[in-house]
Image (cartoon, rainbow, N blue to C red; front, side, top):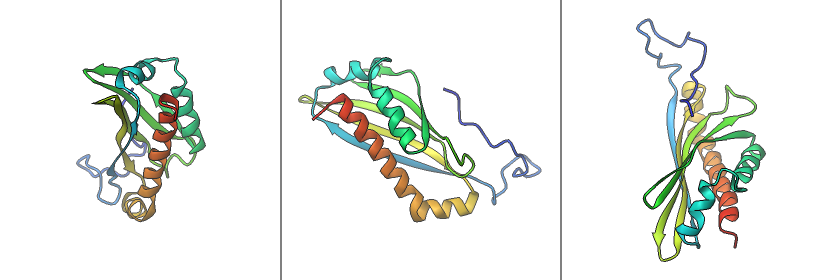
Length: 159
């Protein structure tokens, strides 16, 4: 996956090439997790499988929230599986942020594992966007991530 695209308009750059304070974007970090009552050894192959249904569930969940999800190549490192993802808004691209994150499956031992998502997004609209994010948008982002993880976890470890 490539790095996030930057706004095409360069009028927000000062003469020295730095972003002007009025147009600076604020990075916001977001993370959440759910515990799965299944062993890592049973769940990891599903997350690594490019044809597994969790990917279509992820796409439907993101689409329902008006985003497109791009899923990168998963990698296993020891007792963890990491899958890079990107949420891109399908409408209002200049008003909604793009999220770059990792989905991580971690072995907790004793037949349990944790599915988490950690990432960051750049708040659009400079200071106004940062204020809106503090007031309400971050809570909406957290709820979206929670829903996304819950829907994926139901596919990987149904109740």
